[in-house]
Image: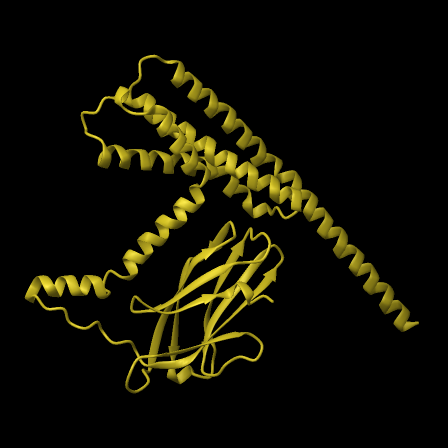
Length: 306
């Protein structure tokens, strides 16, 4: 009787969990109507603004800028609608993504406007007349920039991060030294370290958790890669930077993280965690591991989940 009662309780608990999951899924599907409606309004309103600008025979700098902003918002909204409908069709939409889809047109319009200002500053004269510029070319570029605004932001962030990480690296160091005395000294040596970089990729509901850590021996349960760099005696502590270079998801957080290994904690795995959202199909992630701005390993963790 006791075993039958326990089995009945387990079945009831399983049914309740299933119902809770269904309720949460229905709530997410209904909540998705908010950003979907907003994106549709953005496309309609911005499209109307573009028509008004085109119907105005007197072309001005303000009209050009407004058309670029409108087209950037339209492109971003179209891209967001495509992603959102795909998530709804696969029943993978999460409530936490609502703000992302609501602000996607704003981001697309801002990026398009920023690149337009850079274009006018670099490639055209300050006295150039609006009539001399190709309006339809600018609008087409703004649509494409807005549509791929996420990719543009990721590439700009990667560019600035690379510049920051290597600000005191080999190229700057050599340039400063060459300007001072005309010589090119050798770059600073890497700290001595011999160990293994271990990584796993595990699903957590609709999110993938990428964990990267250092340990002295290879792992029997996870992917491992040997790191053997530097010369001389092992350093008492070594800091590596793990940076996500590319992935096939919609969002990755954080973009990079520092991993510090210390001799006194050699037996304790030290690592970092990255969260990937919106991955469709087989995950594809490329991670660069660097020390003092110099790449020591590149991980293809696409197969780590298998």
